[in-house]
Amino acid sequence: MVESVAVSGVIRTLSLVKKLSETAEISISIKNNSFHTLSNVITYTNGTSIDAINPIIAPYTNPPPVRFETNLRGTMGMLCYQIEGTSYYLLISWKVPLLSIRRRNQFCVHVCESPLPEEQKEKNLFFKHVHKKYKKFSEQSIQWLNNNDMIIVNVTMSNR
Image (tube, rainbow, N blue to C red; front, side, top):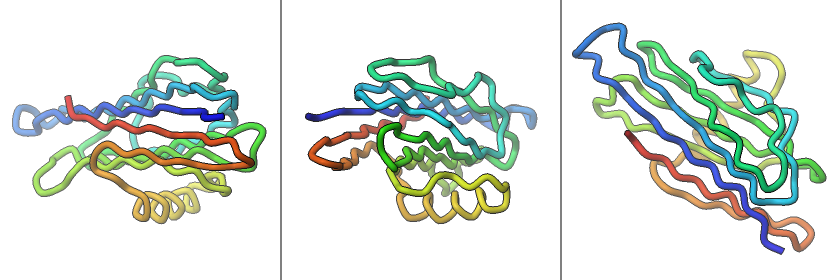
């Protein structure tokens, strides 16, 4: 049986030349096309959440996206959902510079056996390790196989 989870991120970077108070925004959508519930979300971000994070994403649902706003340093963060019925976690991370001169938007999705740590310092170290190892700059797809059930995670990142 093939199950899929689709994650898309829309990253809008506004020009700093216009105004110093301008910000960047990232929007993350998760469409759960699997029989697994995504739950027990843990977050790590240096930005501000504009919309409430969906604490539970039920099977075969498409909840509203979550949006984050950033400051002059840019934004980075990670969402970690437990994949119920398994010992795995879905990690979604991003790193978006406000000024994109010689820097590119990064997006990462990874399935692993370790959840995001509780302590802030440990979250930062975990983010740096996982994001650095698995980051992507454009569309990607990963597959995860467990007991003959396959979960496909599709990721799309775009600038608007």
